[in-house]
Image (cartoon, rainbow, N blue to C red; front, side, top):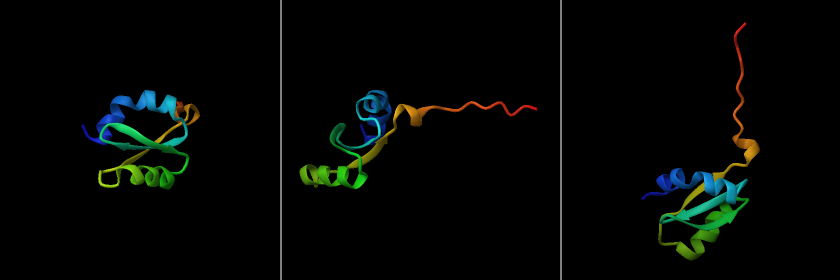
Length: 73
């Protein structure tokens, strides 16, 4: 499974566990978390430098709110 598919399958639990953070994923596992994408990447690189590292932002509940607008006049 690639990192994007892992994210899709686990996005709800990851967003609840790491709101407002960047997560580094290697081989279907979160290996680093930080408020900075660069720091998350560097932490992951230290331990898993030879593997592909994917960085994803986990939005907060407030960021996930969808605004519904009625544009009818």
